[in-house]
Structure formats: structure tokens, C-alpha cells
Image (tube, rainbow, N blue to C red):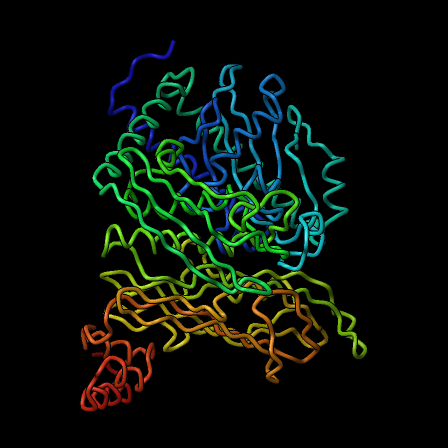
Length: 569
């Protein structure tokens, strides 16, 4: 029988579980093959009780992964069956509707046994570079075209890996070694979490996780509901229109605050798109919950109970509740706009709390390189898939400027140039902040960035663009200015689309400018010391400083003199 422990001991174990899953995540970062995991942190890790309820998540990772993964373990239990779960088992899927939203995420779940009894689960997810099909992008018209589907199944049975499954995977993807390496990294990080959990259970003489799980979930639920009770029982609506693929899409939400829950109702949102930008409900739910949680209870640890008071409603066959077999490869584009849509409504209920709109979705692109076809290629020319994650600017906050080239809401890190160029014959010619891209305001929107990409001599490539904000830049809030839009073209001025696979001939570069975040408040209220600082740093131009912020010619002359002298203000 599990002995009775003090509240202090339970709190120590709670913190210990958070440390365990963070070590689990860091093990994945260190061992993964894909740069999207190693360099960008596009992953999640978590520990669950025997019923499949998430008890703790790693700090490293993305809300879209971990909040979606919070629902995934229950699907694994249902599909595998408890009676079929054995020590040494490892389970796998990339099911978009029972995993984290698209085929390019591999989720692995490992049951954790202690003294022969199933006591919990470890789960982790990572984005993989290729899963076959059309490749990562929005061009498909059904999920069947988007790559290899792996239903919830056993990757390993009592320690024995299913070699038939690994051969099928290898035979259907462009980067087989990289993908299989990532799968083994996912399995290994779960095993590390399991070992640390058993160490804790032995140390505290625990037979099950029932008591500590109950402590965590009860305290988290009560703390979250207390925050909700402190809010006014009101409702408000918000909406946002973004580029979409062939035509704009509109997200609509009505936020209703009750004593013990907040309902987000997405009725009225655009229908399912013909291209792969649709979002399964599990991913919409992940980011809608995240938006509300960071607004009202950011310091309460994330688990099943702290997410429970947030109820998400969406009509079926809308772009935020796409059903099988809708194409969903770029579900993150819509999903990453959900928080700003929620904030647009929430700002009407609690003014002065949430930021202005930001770039929203990641500025991702994938380069599919191959030997040039217009002339003989060098013998060392090769095929390669290079995926890179990049970011525009985040929206200005009520009391602070937006963050430059920073991914919000995903939190995914920008990949270093060196890591990107090490993967394949790609060349990044330029990567720098984009002046004047942040919306003007009392607090300024975060800057986007410029990027120029090409291929090493002897190669041509397809560029799969995964952008937005071309025609619908981030809007400012409460008098703040809009951020700059996305632009993309070849270096000979050949126009390119913000989404879709596009051929780039040998010797050509792609010139990209990523969007900035919206500003917050009247620009005339911005402290002139901050305006001068921005001008000195090159964040804004002289024209913006003078015409929008009202900086005097004398102050501008002083800043220019300081720049010439290499000093600081």
C-alpha cells in the first residue's frame, strides 16, 4: 500500500515530474537526426497517469504538440487495449486526428510498468522532415496524397522492434535514415523518462501514481478555476482574415466566460479548404486553450486538469475542424492564428492584457534540391530535402515591444544558418532583421526578417513556401500600426506565391521578407528615448522616426552623429 505523504512531499514530486519530462525532451534534442528537432525544438514530451491523463509536460516544446498530445494517449489506450499493453512495448502513430494534427508529426507512447503493474505512460512527439507523398506543403487535395499514414500500432512488442514496419517506412520516404533515426530517438527519450520515474517511485516508496496524480490534477483544476472566477461573466467576439491558399479565410470566435469555464465557439469560421491548410479540431483546441491559459494563468503548470476548464466548440467541416480525409499538412498555419483570434475577442473583455497581432504562423520553407537539369551537373551534385523554420515578429505587448523574429505562439526556435547549410547543398545568402517591419505604436511590433536562399553550384530546386500575411498583415491594437506584410520573389523579380511548391532554376535566388508584428497604442505616445534607441539600432528609418513618431530633426541629427561615432544613446 502506498504510504501517506505530506503536501511538501507531493510538491517535491510534482517538481520532480516536471524535471523528468524536461530531461526526456532534452534527450530527444540531443539524439534526434532532424534539424527541426535538434535546432528548432519542434517537439513535446509528457508523463501521464494510468488512465492517460497528462500530469506534466516539458518546458521545451510547442503548445500545438503538447496540448494536442494531451488527448492522444487516450486514443492509444483505446486502440491498443490495456490487456495488450506489455512491458517493453512502444507504440507509434502519425494519425492527424488522433495525434497532433498532420502526418509529419510522429507521436510515440511507452507504457511504464513498476513491479509488474502499469502505472503510467510517457509520450513524445517530433516533427520529421519527410513522410513521403507530395512532401511537406499545402499542394495536396486529400490526406492520402500527403504521405505515409501510420495508424496507432506497436513499434516494439516486449522489446522487439517490428522490422516489417521499419521497412515499410524506409520504402516510402525520401530521407529514410533521418526518419528512422528520429523514431529511435523518440523511443529512447521515453525510456529515459521511464527510468527516472521508477527512481522517484522507489525513492518515495510509491506503488502507483494515483495519489500524486490526484494531488497534481486537483490543485491545478482549482487554481485555474479560481482565475476564471475572477473574470467578469461576459462574452465577446473576435475574427481575423488571413491569406489562405487560393482565397482568403476568416477565423471567427466567440469567447464566453462562466464561473468555472471559458467557452471558445468558432462558429462562422470558413469552411474546409481544397488545399492542405486545414486544421483538425485537436490542433485548434491546443492553441485556443494555450491562448487563454497564457492570458489568465501562465504560471500554473500545464496538465490535463489545468486545460480542462477551457471548452472548444467548432462546426465540423470548417477549416478549424477538418474531418478525414481533408488535407492537413500545413495545419499549423491556421492553428497558429487561433491565439490572436482569441485575443481579439478577449481584449474586449479584459483590456490592456493581451498583445497586438503578430506574424502568427511560422515562416517555414522546404528546399528540395537535385542536380541541375538544364546542363550537365557536377558528379558530386545530389538530391536533398532541407527544411528550415524561421519567424516573423511578434505583436507588441501593452507594456513592452514585440519580440523580433520570434515565433509566437509556437515558441519554435529559428534554425541557425550553419545548421541549415550543413544538411544539404543549400546556400543562405542573407538573414537579417527587416527595418520598419514592426507596426508603430506606444509599444512597437517585433521586426520580421529578410532571407535570401539559393543552391550550391550545379543544383536546381523546388521551394515549398509555407507563409501567410502576404495580403493580410498583422493588425495593430488600440491605435497601433499594422506590421509589414510578407513578400517573396526570385532575384530576377519573378513573382512567387506565399504558399505552394515552386520551381527555382539553376543560379537563381529566392528573396523573402517575413512579416512584422502589429503595434500597440498611439505611436505619438511612444517615449522618444525608445524611438532614438530604435533609430540607433537600425530598427526604424529616419522617415519613420520623424513622420510617424514625431522625432525632431535635432534628435535625428544627434542619433546620426552617435552612429558615426560608434557610440550609444
